[in-house]
Image (cartoon, rainbow, N blue to C red; front, side, top):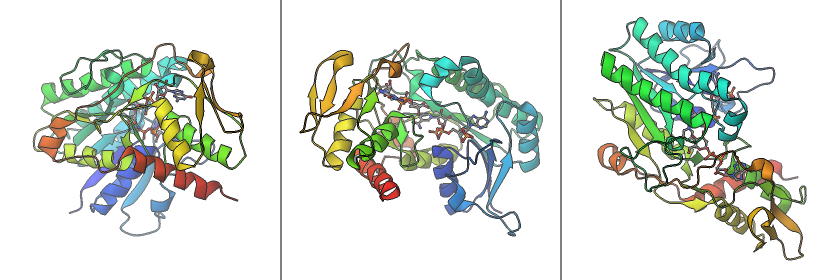
Length: 345
Ligand code: NAP
Ligand code: GDD
């Protein structure tokens, strides 16, 4: 019998890679998409199967993580072996603008799924994965951060995810459920949303190369992130779910890069020569003709910044035998190639 997985957040970056991965592993994948006025399935269109096809392995359902009834109905109807909760308002800066919605989706969303498993009496059958985040460490800048490092979230997003983290552990300990957290550090790909810094940099620098844009405006150039590839990280999610006993794992590359250095890596790949000048908000990068290609804009600074994330994933490396396959240079290369191929002409 094929295993059934239910993915909340199927239309997002990770949801699309995870769905592909599970289909290859012979799962039947059910995914939850939100109703939207414009089409939001671009990342999964290539694996879409028409409802009239028999024995489908990829099935989409309407639902919303903020709507308890739809969550409960889907869990009851599908009775999945594995549920992956990837649904979230996942943008840190936006969470300062929409803190209440972020709490509803990112914190209570996890609770809704856990409760649906429990009152449908699926505790023994259904495993639950919660998409945790390195944003939990926030102002705790003591690196590298691992499963034992303390949490000090620094945004409404981080605080909401802290609730989701602990409610997952609470249901595991209270009801003996297989419920676990992956504490994932930043991971990117050509499918990354356009307002996250890596994709924003890649898209703007490609447009600059093609003379379609003059300047890229950024916020804090000195934030340090541990950036991996989403494809490698969804593999870790699946490994976490295959264990006999549930455990929380940090997933990270263990290598750190600043936002400024990410800009340099993209510029190098595109053969754009940058010269950095100035300090603070006045810092900028010029091309050989003295044109400003990169500048800072205070609109992109956050009320509170997470400056220093670097993960120690030795538990995952030892117990799950997981390690990342993609280097940051390969990640940049893949993102730039995809963008250039799509926008050429
Ligand atoms: P993403 O691209 O922003 O995808 C988020 C997904 O959640 C989308 O499918 C989105 O649907 C869905 N969603 C948002 N609100 C929803 C709601 N109310 N009901 C149902 N679905 C909803 O995020 P991602 O990068 O794939 O990340 C996946 C998860 O991992 C998120 O929970 C994120 O917080 C967490 N995480 C990400 C990273 C990272 O670096 N990528 C690191 C650590 C943790 P639409 O397509 O309709 O918007
Ligand atoms: N988005 C954005 N836009 N970030 C900028 C910009 C800009 O113009 N300029 C500088 N930054 C800095 C941010 O201040 C932050 O320090 C860093 O670049 C990365 O920002 P994002 O790419 O927006 O990601 P994030 O680290 O805040 O959050 C992502 O990773 C988390 C895991 O640590 C998201 O995917 C979260 O959902 C995830 O939990």
